[in-house]
Length: 412
Length: 84
Image 1 (cartoon, one colour):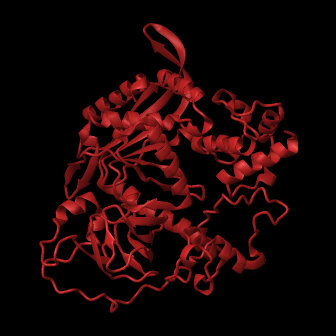
Image 2: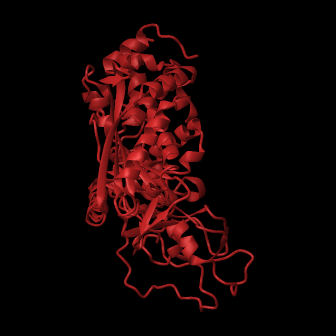
Image 3: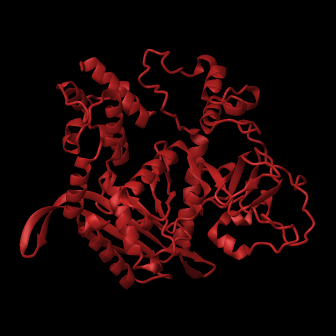
């Protein structure tokens, strides 16, 4: 069971997307796992052939539990195992999907350990995440339903049919406008809310207990950035418009190239810088709580692509369909509480990361420059960073670099 | 577009972004972003939704006119310009 974030202790295997004998390639989705926060598609960390699936769907297991055995491609089972250390750094999934050690006898599946009670809404049946959530909310046992979706999977309509009059069918009520077929009700119920609260509490307590934070703040004139963005958006159809958030992400990513001490992880008493720049984006969920999935390789993607990926990431985070890599490999986090009207946000670092950047509200302020006083759109920019990995001097230079990037938006 | 059509289009676009919202209880003069807890991504998706529903492409400079439900109805019914 991969660790999909510092705040995860157990996960429930919902379904396998592969069977023994299947060939898989690095990045393929092999399983669907439910955490306290969301349902996550688990990606495989390297190429190979699935030898055995060791955990039954529906079972809740601790992080680190062996889920399946994988054989390397084109390699006889007697080949040396892939270097585990490298794989483990690249993807925490490695711990749980590790190939068998050389010449080790196949370990039997561990049915002897007392299984966690099966969640009645998550037996080993095929069902869409939306159908599962709806069934859980309505107290319907999925095993009693017949699926009409692809391959017999249970879809929302099946659950609604079983629920009879208990749920409003789209278009059949006097207020059909509210029940748009596109809208998904991501109301996980109080269980998920409580679980998410506990998960956030655990991660943030660990952060404040272990990480010596230092905090820096500055203010950045966004005149150039917003002027450029306004002109750009005026040329674009509404579906291709970009948000200031995309500009901020790019500016942070490019500035990070100059501040490697802030990009990476603190693991086993030492800082491990990351070549790749994967920025975790703090996203508030409508039903409450927070999740910070990663946008990958932000420094290497042009702005329009970044905007598309950001839009997709926010939508999937809110629909509860994120991928394992997005929840485990962020190298820094960006939080943007300015939407709520606060001027400044000092974040709590998400371990094992070593920094979190915060943007506040953009608002017009009196601004002195070159001996003149004017009114400019200004944003509060902050950094909370791990003093074990960097010091305030480097942090200050990093904030200055973000500012510099935002003053020449055409190069972002 | 008449006010009823506008109201329906706006409600459908909002329901897609804030499915849990009670639009029936919404004060038409209240700030939409505040009362429905919409962030800038939600609002952009709302504008995209309005375009999909009505064909009207609202330029960014007109966003302030969409601040309230009543404002949205006024904007859509004011012989608005069809999408480019």
